[in-house]
Amino acid sequence: MDKISKALKRFSVKEREWIKVILEKIKKSDYKGLKIKKLKARQDIFRAKKGSIRIIYRIKNKRIILLAIERRSDNTYK
Image (cartoon, rainbow, N blue to C red; front, side, top):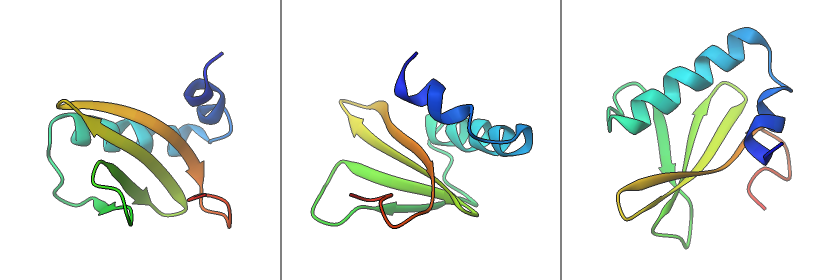
């Protein structure tokens, strides 16, 4: 099981729906209504958030690569 599938199991059904909507919007480059921020010192890594959920992803050659889907904690951005 990959890291993303394992992370998704820790979320409720409602949270998984939020994650799905956020990922679809990112895929379509429809950032309206999303809280997206470029991470410091990186040009290609971004964070999208909804409540306590954080989706960390990289854009490389116009492809979206998911790095992590986590709840906000002290270790989220390390």
